[in-house]
Image (cartoon, rainbow, N blue to C red; front, side):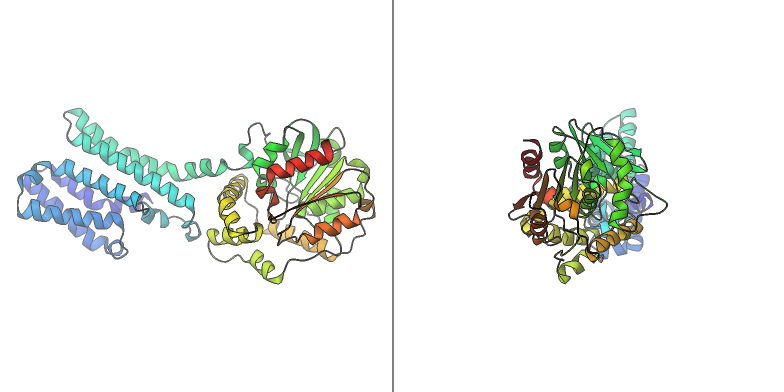
Length: 453
C-alpha cells in the first residue's frame, strides 16, 4: 500500500523537489509532474480517481499560469499554494465519500471487504489524516527558519506513519468493541477438562452453549451483561470448537453432551442452569436427558426437538449454505434469515456484524469446525430420540422461540413444550431465529420470572 501511495504522490514529489530551484525549477517540476501523471497514472485517470484528476487539473493550472504566463502571484506562492490544493483534494474526496486512499487500500485488501462499512471508515480516517498533514505542511511553507522545515517534514511523515499503523490497529479496536471480549469484568479464557470457557457475574451458575457457526465469543454482549447480575454466566465452547480444541471430535450430539459432563461437574459448585441456543439447545437437551438430576434448570432458545422436528424450507436452507459473493453479501443473507424483516435486519445488522468480526479476532472458525457443527445438527435431526427423562424433568424448563423463526420454525418449540407439559413456553411475536440479538432484555426478564422468582 505504501509503495502505491508513493507512486500516487509522485507528481507532487517531483514538483516539490524542483520547486526550490527558482523559476526554472518550478517549470521543470510542473512539466515532470504532468508527464508522470500522463505516462504512469493513466489507469487511475480512466477510473476517475479523485487524487489523480485533482492532481492533473492543478498542474495544468500551474502550466498555464506559472510556466506560460509567469503570473507573479503564482510564481511567488506556488509552494504553499500547492500543499493547500493537495489538502483540498483530500478533503473533497472525503466529502464525496470516495476517500483517495481507497484506491491504494483495495490493491492490498481482498475484494470481499471492499463494501464493508469499516473499510470505508478506515480510509476516511486515513484521508482526513493526510488532509490535516497537508494543512500542517502549508503552515510550514509560510513559516520561517527551522520551523519551516520541521512542519513540512511533519506534514508528510505523520500521515504516512498513521497510514502504516492505522488500518489493522483501528480495525481490531473498532470491531472488538462490539464483542464478548470487551464486556467489563469478563474473565480471560480458562480451560477445564479440555473445555475452554469465560465467565462473568455472581449467583447461580448458568452454562451457555452457543449455536452452529458460533463460538462462545459470538454471544450478544448485551444479553450476557444483563444476565450477569443474576447468574454466574459460564460461556463454554463444546469439544472441537473455538477454545476447546480436541484431537478427536464427538460424532453425535450425545457424545458431545457426554464429553461436557466432567466439565459441568467441576466448573460449578452447585447444580447449574443450562442455556442452549439453536444447536447449543440440542446438546443441552441431550445433557438434560442424560443427567437431569444434575441440573437446576433448562433454558432452550430457538431450538428443536430430536424427533418430529419441523425442518426449514429448502429455499432457506439454500440461502443458509450459500457462501458466494462478498462478506457483505453473506451478512445480508444471514440477516435475511436471522431476523424477521429487512428493517430489523438493517437495525441490528451492523451490531451483529461487529460481534461476529470481534469473535473472529479471538479466533476464526475453521471450515473443519463449521463442518463438524453442521454434522451435529444433521445427526440431531435424523436420529429419533425418545427424551424420556427430558419429558419428566422435575426442574424449571423454559422454552423460547420467535414466531418468525425461519431456521428453527416455532412449531418446534411448541412440540417440545407439548412433549414436556411441565415446561413453560414463551413466543416472541415478530422475532426471528436471532432472538438472543433481537430481544436480549425480554429474554432475561423471562428467565428471571421462570427460574428466580
